[in-house]
Image (cartoon, rainbow, N blue to C red; front, side, top):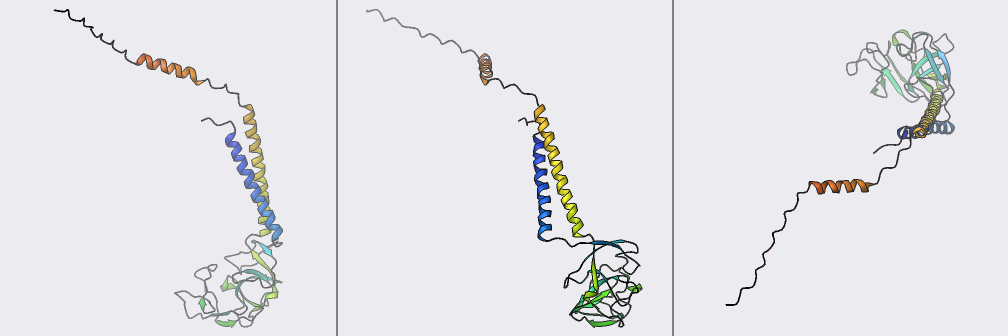
Length: 254
């Protein structure tokens, strides 16, 4: 069975147009229903967050609404132990949590913080590093956060008695790997590009159909059938002549 010229391109064009419309429409609707937070770009200063963030590395910052801080968030906060206006730290515990550490004891063969009675897994720390240089046992007050940097050997934090937990309203921004606002823009551009590609492919398919030569209508099947019948007749063996039945004359009367 022969396909019409440009048929495959036409199908591909339809698929691209539908896909592009879904991407563009989905991102646009999502932005309208739940607008992404505005972001700013900054630069990490110092080595307190290595190996997660190094000195001079570009970072993206999003505003933090009240009550949105979670354990593990990397934030920019005004802390009493820093000479800078703000410093990057990680939220290790939130209001109501109990966090403790004993340098002399290991949990499952490793030195670990204990959060609410459970050993805390901190994959962002290098394995050979201790999670703290001092012992502590703190219950974080409501409305406060317990902040520590990732480079525990060369940084200050809430683990020291003269610092302690920090009021949550001192957190000015959250550090994100990639801002949703920027991702949404790229999503809309991708959808528009797919639609454009589908339109171009549709035009190519239409041209291919327009240039295709007209094919003559297929001949009727009657001559072919007649020829086949003739061929069969020629190939069939000739029938032997029927033997004549002798006719007996009536016997003469005696």
